[in-house]
Image (tube, rainbow, N blue to C red; front, side, top):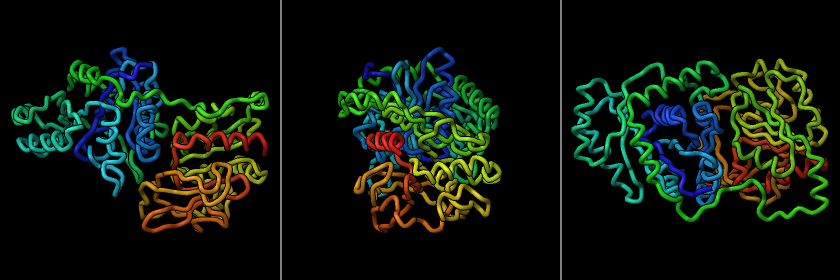
Length: 461
């Protein structure tokens, strides 16, 4: 595909400015114009991509320079944007906020530079007038390599307020590409870990995305935004699209025979398990697996022929009663794990494999209990595999992300999954037989051998 796909990055001075509303609304508004829109999100966020997918009809994808490394940002972007007319990338936090103690790494500004993409700054103008010019000028001039191509003013109170803001911004030299009034119907409900995922809202989420699209279409100059995106040029560095196929693997006859016996890898989904990177399933398929989704809230059996199980993140604490009530599936998961079959569980998956969650019985695969906590655990992690497992050989280094308000006791088993490096080194997670369970969310594109190793164990277990 062409490496010059039109693209925009939607950023803001801080969280809460309206990035998700503008980015999602812009995606839907472009799609309504007949454009094939590629949706992306900076950072490890799993929830916003669900709204992006609803707006565009395409899988929402993440671009994380910490988890995957800066060198993969361009290729992963091009992989997701194949066949699209335009791409919209929603930023994370404030424009220049990145991984703690790592400078610009993984910030929206960093990703924008890696993509060579113009930035549209969304500013919450609700409590300012002329000061908006100083704010925008500061963000536009802070890093000369970041091109702020325009601003969208959000939460504007009145025509007079808009007039004052526009007058002030004429001095900043950054064009106003949109003005949005306050609109309650575009808000999305939040709880302890952020927005409520699309899978849990169904019709309400559809209505919210439609309202975002209408607001953006009414308040923004879509023609000017599209023109800005089309002026982006080629992605820097001559990037080629990422591919889930291993570039170093050359199939042999025995490999080809194994491919014909594609093992079934069941992936948990539904409202309780909404956190997953699209590339994980793609890597599993490329490694020769047949990927079959299932919903632990409703399905009483694992998919027929399940040889391996992947349980990602989500909100099992919200659905603990329903998960516990589905005793047939809990027993099926325990039996699969007891047989030595490969099981990979992250965060919510870890909780589901525990003996109990907030006093309610779970699968009992791990001799550990889980409970809700008042404390938010959040941040990037640099980890190394303590021993061999179905996912990684001992010594394999991977970067991960932790994001939860729960506690598992004990925090690790006799064989921990990871050693977490940093100022406070610790071990974390559980490895027992074919089970690898941990709080860390990892992006397998950074270490494609993870998926191949997992599928190979599915064939031989």
